[in-house]
Amino acid sequence: MQLRQKRSSKNTELWENENSVFRTQEYSQKQSSCMKSLWNDKNSKFNSIERSLKISKALAKPYTIIPPNNKPFNIVGLSKFCEENNLSRKQMSRVASGLLESHRGYKCIKLY
Image (tube, rainbow, N blue to C red):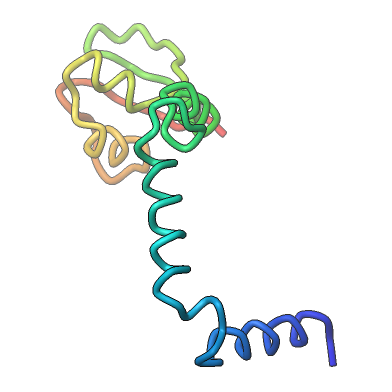
């Protein structure tokens, strides 16, 4: 039997056993209170502004924007650009994917 299957069957046994520690009300309440404290703590790594900014920067993609004055420029992060310029991120994404020609005079090309 492979290691993955062994782990899977062991976990299944633990969860299905009525006498398992995982099936007790005390365990559920302890887990619940632990997670609530993590998410409600402003300094928790799960709930920090710094973490959110790191994630958004890491996921931001490069685009070339062609505004109505036809002077193209490059940006990283379409959401932030759209928010600053009162544009719809959804519509600009459609422009970038080729579903729309432009949005409020702005054209957008996704760079890879």
